[in-house]
Length: 388
Image (cartoon, rainbow, N blue to C red; front, side, top):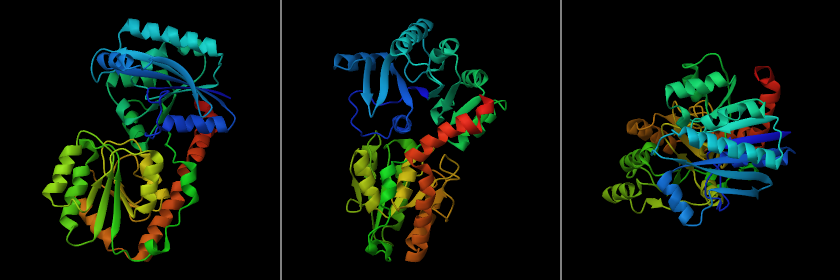
C-alpha cells in the first residue's frame, strides 16, 4: 500500500532524536509492515525566523531518508506571528511545488493523512482534485482554531482523525455529519520488554523518586507540582526530577530556592528519548497535570516503565488512566487536589501500589508504536471503509 502523509511537525535532516515525534514513529512502523510511506513535511515558519535559519545553513527544501521513510520538506513562509494565515500566492506556489514533487517521486497514494491539518489545509485543498483519493485530516488540540476554517475542513471530509476523544467532542459541536476516530500516539516497542522493577523497589519505600517530563511553560503547571510538594516535604521523603526546558525554567528554579527544596528538586534540561526512558524506569511516580493536552504519549511511556502515574483530568489521557485502577487524574492547576492525591500515593502499601502499576503496564501495551500503527490502518480500511 502507498501511504502519503502531510504534516507540519517532522524531524528535519539534522534530526537529533531529542523530541518525541509521533508522525515519524507511525511512518517507521508502516514501513516495517511493508507499506511505502512518503512524508511531505510542510514546514510553516514565521518569515524572519525562516530567513535566519537559512542564513545558518538550513535548507527550506530538502529530501532525505530516515528509517526507510521517504521525507521531503517544503519550506513555507507565514508573515504574521502565531497565525495560520497564508497569502493566496503562497498557497498556489507551494501547491504546484508539491504536485511536481509527487509526480517526480512517482507515488500514487492509496490513502492520504494530513496531521496538524489546520495550518496547512488550504494548501492540501488545492491538491484534492489531483490526488483523487481519500484524504483524512487529523486534528490536534492546536487545530481547534478559527470556527469557519475548522467547519470548512470538516465539510471537505467524511472521516476525521482526532488525537483524543476530547477533540472529537469539541468537533462534534461544530459538525455531527462526520465520523471521528481516535489516533493515539505510540510508545516505543522496546519499553515493554523490561517492566519488572528491582526487588527493593517493590518494598515499602523509604524515599520516593518522582518525575516530570515536558516543556517548562505555563500551561504545563509545573509550578503546581512544586507548590504541592512544598506542602508535603516535611511529611514524606522524596525527590523530584524535572526533565525539559522552556521560558518558565528560571521562575521554577526561583520557586525551588524560595521553598528551600534545592536538595529535593533537580532540573536536567532537555534529554534524548532513551535518557528519559531510563529516568522513568528508575522512578516511582510520574506527575504531569497539564491543559490543554491532546493525548501525551509520555503518560503511556511512564505506565509502561512501571511508574504510578498522576495525569490530567478531562484531558486527552482521561479514559486511558482510570482513577485508582491504573493511575489517578487531577484537574490541572488544582493544587489542593494534587496534594490530596500525592498524600494518597505516599500512604499506599506496597501491594496496593504494585497492583496499580501492574495494571498500568498491562493497559499501556495497547499503545505500543507497532500496535497503534497497525490499528490506524485497520480502522481506516476495515472498520471505517464505508465512510471513505
